[in-house]
Image (cartoon, rainbow, N blue to C red; front, top):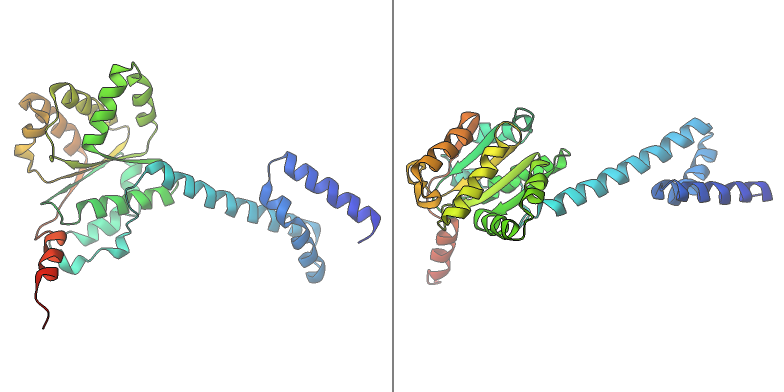
Length: 256
């Protein structure tokens, strides 16, 4: 490398750093050497650098989306044992994982006993949405209700609602395990009502619809929430014995 080349390289790396193109900054010399060997022109050199920058940006964006979603664990659809849950509509899930329901602002409800895979499936759809560039947030319902009540008390409710409104998909897990207070139920309904035809919701619940009043209290509030959730909705039932109960039974079996 001659003196002119060295000066050009230093200036190029300075400019790439100033332009906040870290991958191009790190890879420019290596790609330049490869292009020289391959006798590639300057446009091919620039194209390769741009492609590397875009790939790395998308990788980091995907990482940020997954982190922002706050999934309690990473679960994929490929990891789900459909043979143990033959009642689940697998073709529908394979269609949903493509993400078209998000474009249509449709909802997904998973209904079934505890331990039958509802949270796994909801997380798998959420992770697929993240991979497609969507903004996703996972909440256990009790966690969200607590957050809403705290935000109201601290006069931050409008800010929290605006944050939720920017999501493409909001996952509400475990509706039905703990009854909400009157104020909590009203705030939860407000989230559901605000999302109606604006954002998609995924809800997992162990309660049949007729028992949702156990959580939301008022029949009026329950009816209004169900009306919005089920208007444009895919409902999937998970039946059978709890995975956790099956595992506990296997551990208790005496070894021979």
